[in-house]
Length: 583
Image (tube, rainbow, N blue to C red; front, side):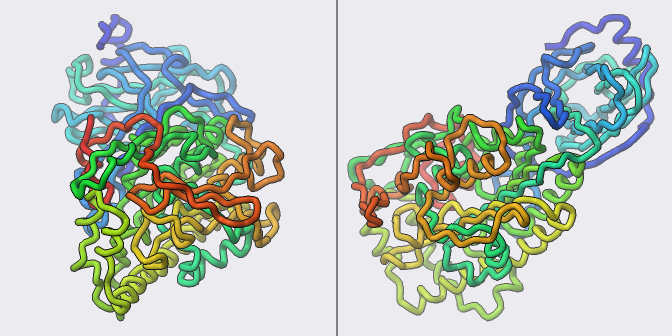
């Protein structure tokens, strides 16, 4: 892969200084998923992302591909209180040979522009330190703008934020071993997160926050006073219905505006009869459907997502369009510091931030302080995961969770305590974000609810009862979206495309049924269960009545995703088991 160094390149590598000069920015490790770019996009906002075909490679070969940084915790239980805030961080990147050097010309006055990027070693490699540096080159004269040293064994991302000098010149990106005499020696590749240039002057477009809370019932909002008040300040859809009863197809629909049948993301078909053994139905990834994130990125927005559910990892394809796709620990507070750091680093950009909270999903684990006064949790002895990993009938599921009314009430107490604890943490972060962006738009969404014996059984993925498919849905944008309670039933997954319409962002996604478009599909259907069910879903008829769809063993029509062993293990803990790693 390495190209021979030409004499001028060798000379330049040798003479580059060995002392750290300019700005130095350190960053924490993270995990994630894919994130390729469709190439740099020059937009009305003046944002440009450098891709491999736009930069001039002077030393070494290069390929554009996602690069992910993982902590040693990746693959372990993310709900463990000892888990670090950030577990993984995936970014679109230029992955280059070591040593490597590439340049990008600034043909106009570089002043009032900011470069953002990050750099990391792709594998531990040798013990020698790698030096990565960005220079400003004018007529072969070099000025160091920022530098970072990457020790052996350090695979974390190190962020760089650089205000460009005035005048015309070239940005020169260089990485090599820092030890004298080793500048020309090869090693493991180095990744630069896709460098982005943007004006220092923040555009007039509003920042956008997508707030998505896993497993949140509509009636649980009475235990989340901050979230309820936030929703009440905007437009609230009182009867919003999820397109499915579990995360994967529901979230794919939010990102694409498509129904589960159209985007194909979910899980393969059921066996003819319940086997009572571990299921091996493959999980289906998103495919090539365009997403709201890609539309926002193409419009010049900086994009990031912080998520806590392994069903949202990169094998799904949900990371497409995100500059940062970050897995955090399964506790609400874990989103705070990393999300705020990204928000502040991009304060010169229009920002699109998606925050996913796992709570109040099982195992219903509010912080220790919030557990005071709660009764013993019956789920500790019942061990739901022992059932979830097996292919059982709806009747067997109902029988397994046939516990006393006292125990049911105790489980509800734990669920509501988890909701309340999440709400307190949510308030801290959202208020900090809004303090620096009072005019931001906030979208509020849940992928599905949770059955707490409303229809005789427990949890989600099996039933299409209102407790599972009716979800909180709102858009908050003071001064732009009037506070309103909408009683008309709607499909919840049209929220993302409604956002694009409100912002007038060009896109090729379907029209939203939440707006006034005559082209919108106003079908309200929830289908494609995760587990065996008494019904295959529900569809709202014109007369206001629900039609029950038959359970026909069908699976999602998409292609199987490639899932690594660590992710499969975490999915199994949540009941999404039986899936064998196929990487």
